[in-house]
Structure formats: structure tokens, C-alpha cells
Length: 561
Image (cartoon, rainbow, N blue to C red):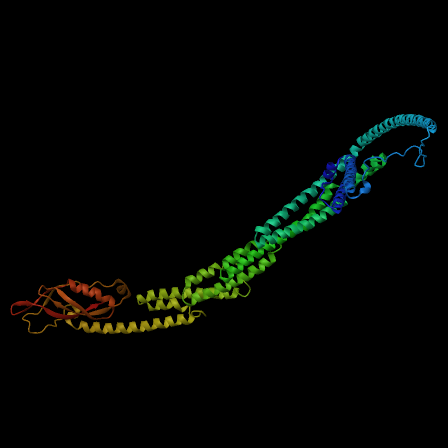
């Protein structure tokens, strides 16, 4: 491993300080340690153990490179020290004497020879020892390899025997991990939704997203603790450790502990999820929705729009968590609506708008009646019915009055005199009928007297024109033909008689002109009288042998008999 590989393994570069390098190293060791503790198989354990060794080797190489730069003590010497001269520093220098030189030269060569022989012996000894050591190492290596193969075979056999025992544990662990992964993924989605709502959503959306995330996080916290309590990963890890140590029996025993009932545990998880997340969320959402509906209802109530207010709250009348509050608010709205409707209906009755009052009261039918308002509503309905009855009786009474049937007119109203609501007005109507009857009787008496008086006159019996022309005509006008006036049918059937006092001018052509009504007993007789006179023909008056116009005055009588 070189320095570049060491940096790559540690995930650092040369710009970091010593403290930062050591911290990165410790972080990697902690992460590997956690993975090693949770590793379910021996293969993963070997992998993480080798990673530990590579990590230690990498930090040593990196730190050594910095030590060589920072501390000269750790630098390797570039070359070895010079050899001392033979004989040492105390050697006597060679004299100039020629006799001593050969002796010293011989001794020198003898020394060289001894050194060479010794060197050869040493080198040969070293080579022999190395050869022996090499043979021993080869033998040890072969033995070690064989031992490893045997151990590997035994491990494979044990592993194969343990696989059926491990399979249920691994299947359970996989299901367990899937539950946690799904729950964690859901929690991540809720956290993302919360951030989006905080950035882009309304205040209401932010409140809901925060509540969702907080409640689901509480559930995740419980779920992790619950999964750890019933996890089988520890049993698998223990079995792998025993197997790696060659303790097959202990590994087998570790896998013989009973596996929890997954279905029962899942039922507990679902039940707890409902209690900690789903039910609180359902209650929270119901209350949030009801809160918004209540705001709509209050705004409608400020406009006296009771229908909109009731419609806004009606869906929550039977909704779980808010139905009691909704019923209280609806009862209040119904009461306010009834009070307002009854006031408007009462006002409509007082001003005579009976159809409006009836429609207002009909609108209350089928709706719940607030306490204390039922009697008020019944009294108003009773009054409205009495008003309708008085109106109908008065109309029928007046129709009989047109026929002068006073007794029948009274009969229409008599039964209402005992009514507490309209009895007084019915009594006044009856008194008015009696007054009209008395006046009619007086009128009839007067007409009868007039009729009797007219019968004494010759022209009254035949409805002839009464001559009111001056005596200076040589010959007064004379009626040639006439037609009786049309008798009003209603007055004829009612037996009403009367008269019309008229004045008109007879022209030289014998026709009536400038017809004026001077008086009448009833206006219904006037038009028939005028139309009748228009059809009459006269012989005009004469004076001095010439026809002249003459003004006449006459009373036309109407008698049904």
C-alpha cells in the first residue's frame, strides 16, 4: 500500500491537520465497529476485520510520512559510517626503518587471511541456517495451509449444517427489517412534505404537516425499540461468532432459541400504530376540518345566512371526535334561525302579508325546534290561520253584501267572534254589515216612497217623458218609440230597485242630445239609463210652423218586480 492509497482509504488529503486526520480515522473505526457488531454472517465479519487492518495500515503510512517531514529522528541515514583503520586509532605509525616494514606487511596479510576465512565461515553458517530456517518455514507453511483447509472444510460443513437452522431467523430478520425500512421511508416522506408546506403551504397546511410528522416520529421511536426487543439479529451474530471460533455446538445452541410469532408481533405493531399515529391524526384532522367549518358558519351567521351556516356544520353532526360540539353549534343555529323566522313571520302577519308568513312558517317544518320556541310557533300558526279565516269570511261576506243578503253575510263572520286573535275585528265587520243593512233599508224605503209617488203620475207608470217645455210651443215634443234600460243582473237578482234623474235636449231630428245625469239612487243604473234614452225617438216640437229643439227632464225608474 502506498501513500496515495492510504489517503484514499482514509478519505482525507494532506491539507488536514493531525487532529483532523485522527478524527477521520476514529470516525471510520467507529462505523466499522458498528457494522462488525451487526454483521449476521462470518463473511461480512471477515470483510470488516480486513477493513480494520487496512485502516490501521493506512494511518501508519500517512503519519510516518508526516513524521519524516517534521522529526529528523525518524529519517533513515543515507549512507553507513566510514571504517576505522586496522589496529585502531592507537596503532603505531610505520617508521622509516626499512627493516620493520616486511614484518608488519606479513602480519597484515595474515590478518587479512584470518578475516577472509572467518568471513567465509560466517557466511556459510548464515546460509546453512537460512536454508534450514527456509525448510522449516516451508514445512510450517504447508502444515498451516493444511490446517486452514481442514478448518475451512469443517467450517463449510458446519455452515451447511447450520443453514437450515439459520433460515427461519434470516427470514424473520428480513421481515423485521422490511417493517422498519417502510416506516422510515414513510417518515422521510412526511418530513419532506413538512418542509414543502413550510415553504409553500398555508398556515393550516403547515399545522397539519407538522402534526403528521411529529406523531409518526413518535411511532418510529417506539417501533425501533420494539424491533430491537424482539430482534433475532443478535442470535445470528452470536452463532456466527461461535462458528468462527470453532464452537459448533455453541453456535447450534444459539439458534435453538424460539423465534417470536411474527403475526402476533405484527398485530401489536398495527395496533400501536393506530393508537400512536392513525387515531390521533384522525382526531386532529376532524377537529381541524370542524374548525374551518365553524369559521364559515360564523361568517354566515354574521350575515344572518342561517342556511349556509347550518349546511357548513351539518356533515359533522355524526362525525367522530367532533359530533358533540357540532350538535351544540347546530342547536344554537337552529334556535337563532327559528327566532329570526318567527319574528319575520309575525311581522308579515301584522302587515297583512299572510302568504309570506305562511311560506316562512312552512320553511320551519321538518326542522328541529329549539326549546321554548315550539309554543311560540304554534301560537303564530294559530294566529295566521285565524287571519286567513277572517280574510276568507270577509270576502264571502262582501259577496253576499253585493246581493244585499245581509243575514248570510253575518253568518260568515259570527263564528269568528270568539276567536282570541280576530274576534274583535270580526265583531267590527258584523257591526258594519248591520250599518249597511240599515242604510239599505232606509234607501229601499225612500225608493218605495218615490215609486209610490211616481205611480200617481201618469208618465211614471209608462216611463214617458215628462213635458217640461214652455207653453209657448205651438206643439210640444212627443215620444214616438222607446226601449227599456238594461237592468243590471246583479241588482235584479238582489232585488235592488232605484231611479236615475236625467235631462236632455230633443233635436230637430227627433234624437236625444246633451244627456246629463242629475242624480241616481245607485251609480250602476246610470249607464243603462243613458244608453236607453239614446235609442229613443221623438217628434220634435213646432213653433210658428217650424221644428225647434226642446229641453226635457225625466226620472227613469228601475223596479225588479
